[in-house]
Image 1 (cartoon, rainbow, N blue to C red):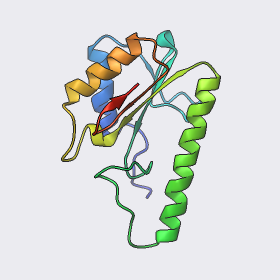
Image 2 (image 1 turned 180 degrees about the vertical axis):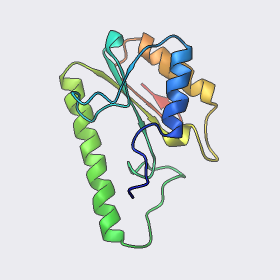
Image 3 (image 1 turned 45 degrees about the vertical axis):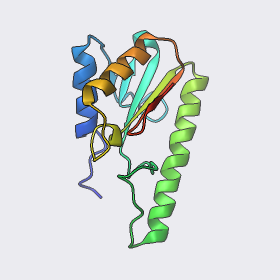
Image 4 (image 1 turned 45 degrees about the horizontal axis):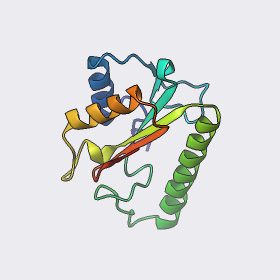
Amino acid sequence: MAAIRGRNTKPEMVVRRGLHRLGFRFQLHRKDLPGKPDLVFPRYRAALFVHGCFWHGHDCHLFTWPKSREEFWRTKIESNRIRDAQDIQRLRKLGWRVGVVWECALKGKRKLDSQRVIQEAGKWLSGDSPEITINCLHSTE
């Protein structure tokens, strides 16, 4: 597990490059905010997470429960899900808008066009909706 990246993953880099190209400026992995969001947009008071489907237990085609050490993985992934929900709730209480882009939106057999993902994230940032989730099935505000 030591070789698994927590930062600068391919999906995160796609989102970062695309939003930067649209003119959005952001800070990375702010330690002073709950959950250390991947991208923070102070001007829009918005935080964006780019979650890996396996590590965050997303119910999609990219996620399957491991067959070995099942109890360990169930505990680990479930605690990640709980922590994610708590971090989002804490950010919302601090007055931040929170978005999540799931890995499956950018890779896998059901992926969306990456430009569409970037456009939806950009539209959310420019708007006033408090939350957005973008995954392989759809985006929800």
